[in-house]
Length: 414
Image 1 (tube, one colour):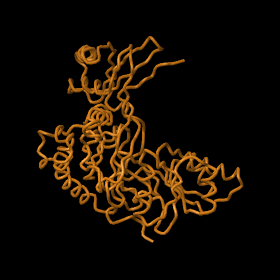
Image 2 (tube, one colour):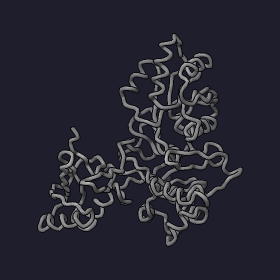
Image 3 (cartoon, helix red, strand yellow):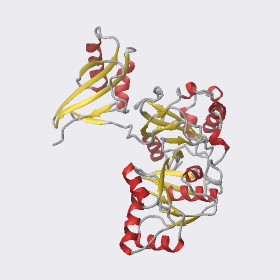
């Protein structure tokens, strides 16, 4: 039995990087030609020169709220806000909706969302039955997993969500090899099976996503004979990364280019530093270029012990949008970044909001090697950008926590 989904997973990292970057200019050109949103935002960009990560990092980041705003503004003319390169008909079998409402197109072709790789890494193999408990209603999660399972050669029971007693009954009678869905719902099903006196001896593996999968729950499943793995995917991008048997972070999918940027900016951070995941997909149907997921993560050093050679990330580490209301005013991570950019001596900055309700205190902690005259100048810049007053603390390089936080809300709400 093979240990990897395909040969792409074990490519030489240099060859993989060269292949991804070689595909990038044509993807940018395609996005400009077929998706009006990128025709506008990348109007002055020569796609041919976007052939390096340095060049890619100069392109604007498209964040989810901007995608939503453009969709809302163009409801009568283009429901996808100019981001889709395909239209209704054979090339677009389905449309899904995420909260907002954001509409996502599903293109034609096997494993459109590229989920088969994650399902394989979770231990599923051709000829097995999978009990799929992701929703088939509105959101694409059910379809994402089902099309990936079909590409792997598996049969799927479309369980969806809810109806726990019927779900358990179907599991007991159909005897699936494993489960796909949220980890919390799997726990609910196992507890319901115990309550009803059902035995589920065939359910021995699980691929979970959509919420946190803490070690305590992973161990709880293992005590009941189920080995669970997680993956990270979004309705906009499909699969981004997946867990392997090594359980050392998540391995990036082969069809995406991932950057970690400082929250509120499009600037890549040094390897190992926590920041926002920004993804460029090579999907020609929905060619999202530098799409900000809003999620925090960091790159892990080295490669996976399973032999997969792609970059690994730590997984989900929180949200990048740390917008905070202070003294009746919203303060955004981009504003902190704007202050820092005015002073080349600043290496990193973190705005700490402290105090009790109605008595907010602002402190901008700044990593720098210089001190002469900086405090007053930085303080003036904070007032200029945020319209708020803040204390400025100069701290040693490397002393701020590596947690991706640009704004820390440390106020007491008791």
